[in-house]
Length: 200
Image 1 (cartoon, rainbow, N blue to C red):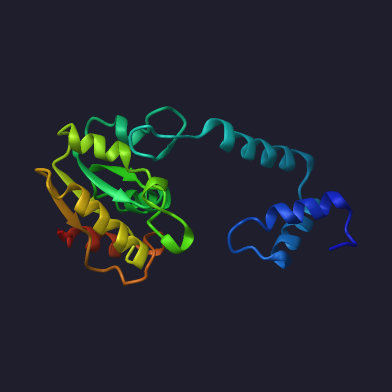
Image 2 (tube, rainbow, N blue to C red):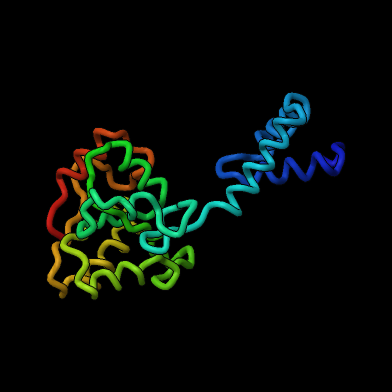
């Protein structure tokens, strides 16, 4: 890449930071932006990136992304606020919302326990969920972490953390393969997994 001007090299480097984007793909994206984007496209692209960083926040209640302090789901009074579906990521929340069957609220952990990756309990968004449980605001916690070693470890930790409280703890089950990622599952698979949840 040394043959490219520095500005183009910098753009290639930026694109290569995206997940699953290698140097060749990053190079193709950068060249496409250089030769196919007009000035308004570049301004829109830049403004969108700026807006993502300045206008999007983390919901103080559940960990979802929002443009206000509390996300639309947590503000929705028609949802069951005493039933909480615990997920690893916002992507998983979007997947469940597409099914349009779940009427409770969510809690996003922003990851899963992985000692090999240096992700411990303190790195996860657990405190606000624990506060709701301790304040008696929860009837059921549905553990919907991924069916991976990390996801199972996290689900087991949360079960042990809350098992002595007077709440129902369930785990989604049927339809999701071991090692699978929720965000790649189709809507029917998600629905069946949700319907087939079991007592933890």
